[in-house]
Length: 216
Image: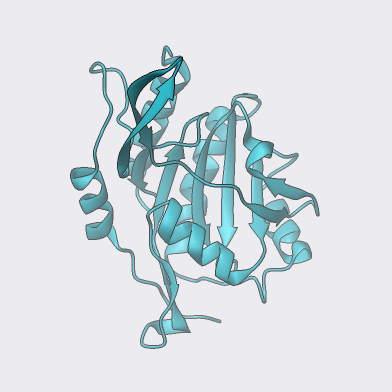
């Protein structure tokens, strides 16, 4: 059994406070992450456009044995997190809280949940399936995915902006964040929340309602 993990909540606060945001009103969530200003020609005229941070293409395998890519989540908002099935510390808290999100939005075709294992050597498809069944998760609305360790760590740190890395000095040899990340239909990160607390997840669910109602 592996030991506990460090939750990098100070990093999450820095992300939220330090990120650029595109916001048009009090009921519209910000877009988190770096943005780039690009210039391009449109109909012979040079125009300026803003490109916001977005989750890139990916390919993992779910507890059901299906390939999961960014297209699987097309036209949906989703909540992402990072965990592993043998974690005895923060992961059980995270899964209790994510189950609340699952129960709250169960059957809503515009919402999905995506949990990435950071221990793919142990967390095979069969292990993830047993884990999902133990939580009472059915169907494809909440996907538990495995794949290349390097790709999982890379997308966690570079795209979802949370800690997911090997660290020999840490208990268990890895560190990961207890964050839940809210992503919109355009694959932009719209919020980062403490997934170990009821308060943090209450705010997440409230913001999910806002995002579902957001006018484009």
